[in-house]
Image 1 (tube, rainbow, N blue to C red):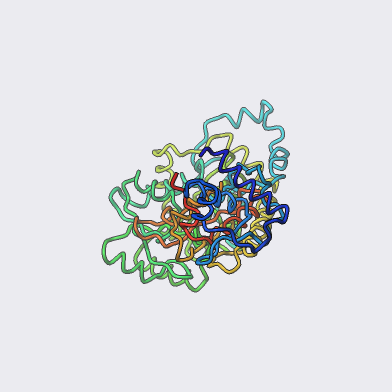
Image 2 (image 1 turned 90 degrees about the vertical axis):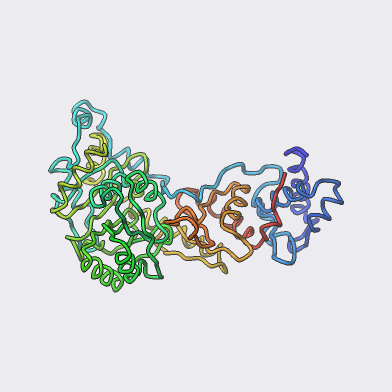
Length: 447
């Protein structure tokens, strides 16, 4: 049966729902019975039911069957008009409706000859005294302010992480990381021939005893962690755990690479405020501004500054002159601060919507965060759930993406809330909630 045929069957049922012929709560026949009645393959019936679920017109209840949704007549998706629009809950790049205008206002005049002349010149990893001073003030948080001479710049946050790892961990060395961590750290470590050592976590973050155990088993050269708004879990490490972890790291002589890219969503200072000589703070403008207009920051203890500079040079990770010029304008005139505050409010609104739509499911979330961690019901597997969501035009990230080592991923997915419009996000969450109620094989397609 062609795609248009199964869609016509879905449209016919959607029309019956819209007309009230099929009422909310009414049970649809089992897929095999539906296939027999319509003289179609069972796999085609499965596609029809999957399409109805994607539109939010039906819900699946484990052990009971498929029912017309209580909200079906609100027209979550119009019959005959599948959205065809991919709802991106995979990548976390918050772009606010008015931010292009704010950035354009800030960068006005950068196209003039005098401004362009400076922006087009070769830049260095330490920038200019002006941008170091502006950058240090801009990065200030919770009473912590780095010294301008501590700043080294890269093209983006990933390059900052790579530069810090290359400077601190020798080829063939070991770096301790959260058991669930920023996915790109795995690729960076592989290119640098560094072994990542997953460290056990609890609700407060990395466990200090796990650091001690890993270091006893084989020497660690550094730790890479995300104490504020951890990716993927969204947790922020409490003060008591920060003190305990720093105590262990300092006793073992372990420097800490502190990824603070999401830190602008919280109020507190980074770990470096407690241990400025032990921590390298990583930040960038990719989340605060946009991935297409970014700059990476490395705040380093002065004793490590030359090593980081050499790492940036050898890696080819120096930022462009234009990136410096644009960032300097946006930091100094308050544009980025205004965007960051607006994004904090936006993240809270999105988390509130997610909490409402996913009520009753096992969700780990931070109200100030742009992502959440969803533990799946026992009848779903992470990869299968991601695939089922993809068939409904929703992109998610399975837990395996974040596992520091293969085979240690919990049965969960991450939902990134930043990218879709609020309307798209509402539709996506509504569809996922219905999907969570369904069994994995209720809507499986084998055609």
